[in-house]
Image 1 (spheres, helix red, strand yellow):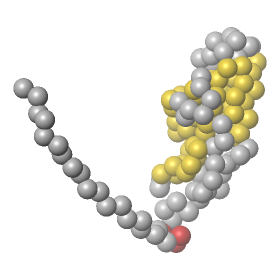
Image 2 (cartoon, one colour; image 1 turned 90 degrees about the horizontal axis):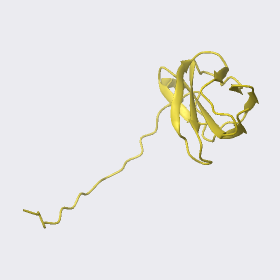
Image 3 (cartoon, rainbow, N blue to C red; image 1 turned 45 degrees about the vertical axis):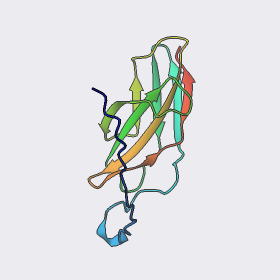
Length: 117
């Protein structure tokens, strides 16, 4: 039997300031960060990025759609590059990197793309 009743949910959203001295989000930028690049060689795409102050780990996301974050393909990376060898020749891939530490992750990097060779 179908339930034809209407349900209403009321939400209250509140912004709570976090003091900088707390260490939470102290390295997190407010805008997407630049310094990410992707280059293709036969059978792999290498994604490189500039280190972010306070970051201890990075996650790389890959998509085949411009503007989409896609799926995480590598996480907990401590270096500033990642070689993606799960690529198909002729396919364009889009990459985003996030920087994190024990307090969490910051915003996404700017998206970069290249076509696999």
